[in-house]
Image (cartoon, rainbow, N blue to C red; front, top):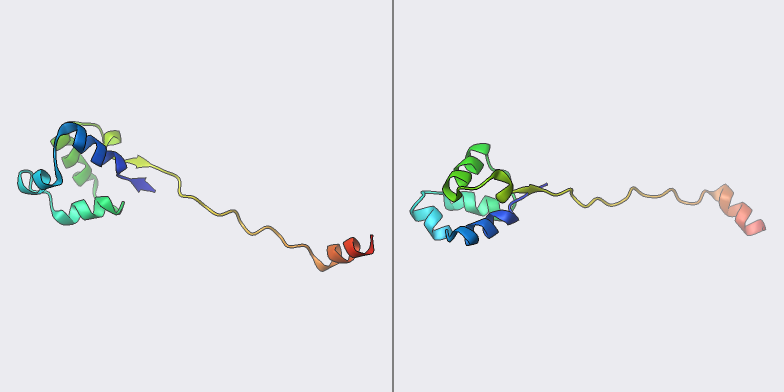
Length: 87
């Protein structure tokens, strides 16, 4: 999953607020919402942010492997249960 946690850190370091992005750079509030929710945005949008913040893509976003639950382990078969009970 792509996450944009680094964007907010980079914005703070560069002294650019969400308000400035909207008013001065004409970034849509909807785009900011999508980024806050780690939803997909276009590469064009990422490029615009890199330009505004004078940074690299990796200063804005990163890939994190999603947590996956292990597949269900096989349950003990009836035959195995019978053997266990007999011993």
